[in-house]
Length: 387
Length: 219
Ligand SMILES: Nc1ncnc2c1ncn2[C@@H]1O[C@H](COP(=O)(O)OP(=O)(O)OP(=O)(O)O)[C@@H](O)[C@H]1O
Ligand SMILES: [Mg+2]
Image (cartoon, rainbow over all chains, first blue to last red; front, side, top):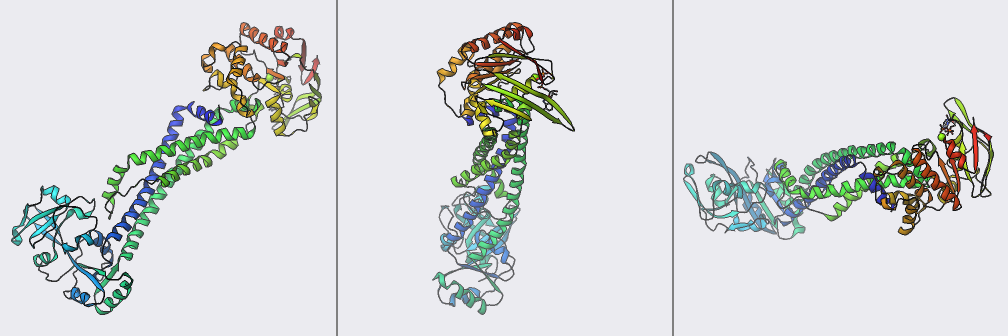
């Protein structure tokens, strides 16, 4: 019978206590693993989404930097509009490959007693601007055709070919495609050609933002400098800035959540230490006997440490497993409570992270076990087994 | 095989000093069967622990197999306990979660030794428990538990068995059985030192040592 088996048998002697201690470790490692997986997935998701976006920077009315971040990735209402001639002035610059105005506005829908969100864009650029989109049906070919987000489609039971009408504007649109669920804010918009939106809202050439792609990426800086020198009242937000502002938003949430997980882990580690100390206290006679039949102090130390590590390692494995089983639910919960979420799965199973978490539990077992194990070596065999 | 010369043992209990042994001189030869008697508090357990290298002495000299043990450090004492001595206690101290077989094998874990299954089984047979090798301690009677403890004491093949009131928790029938087991081991050549309050059992041993107030009053 090896030491490990012996340690395992000892844990089995107090099934309820060992189980409860295990639950504590399992829960806190599950929380830690979920948070780390989420952070990883979240950052990857943002980087990927920005990478796929075919635009290099956004031009917006000055003073709206924060809203831009969400606008770039998913629509947001910005109450200011760019002046009429900005689009044409950007087009006059050198090395511009793509200029795509976007107009986001609210459209009252009294028939349904709600306000619809309209996203006007050049739908020819949809693939570049919104690379993660999957559309059932086709892109609008005419001015009076639209595609709708999954949420609206589900709510109004729309399918390609249906009509949406706005009697107050005396307009109606034919739905050519339904955007598959993205899990983000895109699901709540109606997308139409930007020209149509401009007419609908009485803003010919108006735009909430303008996406720009430069022909040579190394010219981005030169182009943005030239642009801000020439056109007043605009602000330029590059994808790098969007990324860093989203990341800093995520970073503070990360610090908070990781601190919470660490506190949970600290508490459960103290729980483990307590359980093991109790077990040693109860078993002091037995430990004395083991010393008498030939166990050295080191042997006793090893047994106790193995018990602790066995407990926390099992808790760690169970925690990682639990987090994986529950990841779908956690993901839904997080999406609901986050201002911005990239499409796709945010919680991705990473074997290295899983191994890291299990390794961390082993380390915890070591830390929780050292003191009790040291205590156990101090048990005097003659005190313990006095006849 | 073991010699004590002028051994004193003083415990410090708070401010007071307890003189548990006040100068014990005792020589035990290989193959002897010695029973130790004496009133409660006379120092029997203390002497047994010193003989078993579980406790250090305050003054005097202790020699095991011609080697002075008074100056030995913990690692050597552990070696002696592992290889040369088998302990049997009044309360058996079996480990509840382990089978008879695993309880008997326990000292091998600390000796970092492997012994084959048949060897353990032969010890279990020797103490008359071959029908119960797979049972857990709570499924055994007191006498059976003590027999497991004796098998455990034998597993490292020691020369010396130290037993502290091994029959103290048993009825007379089981006590007789345990004594008979010791007598059998003695016949096989083991040296046995047994502390007992049972004068009838003690009288059966070839040598009886009497302690009183930390001194040997009769040998
Ligand atoms: N760890 C200790 N600290 C202080 N005093 C002790 C300690 N161990 C034993 N003593 C004292 O030493 C004396 C001898 O104790 P010991 O246990 O050897 O007696 P004993 O002969 O085995 O008694 P019993 O028959 O009751 O088991 C007693 O007075 C006891 O109180
Ligand atoms: Mg005693």
